[in-house]
Image (cartoon, rainbow, N blue to C red; front, side, top):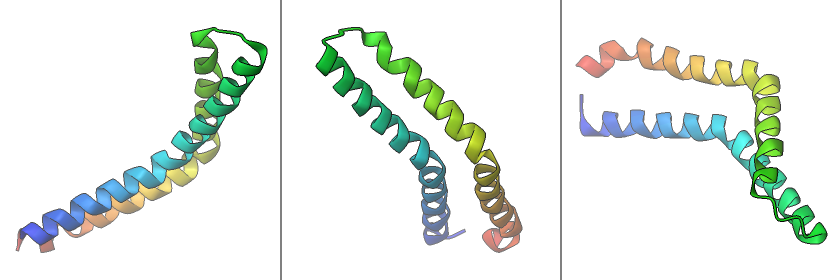
Length: 89
């Protein structure tokens, strides 16, 4: 296994992880900004108020996007397992 192959596999793993985690992280960021703006406008200074909407939003994204997430992960793992003989050479 050459160093280039290792780098290619690592790059593909990082891209897959970012592709799957991206929607959850971006939506969490947007919800956090809206909750922060709401707290600033109403002067509610409660630190735990930001966590509940973020957790609910991440759960909804996981629930809705789970089939797509699994398709992406299975595609990555199938390609990885299928290329094992070429990695050994």
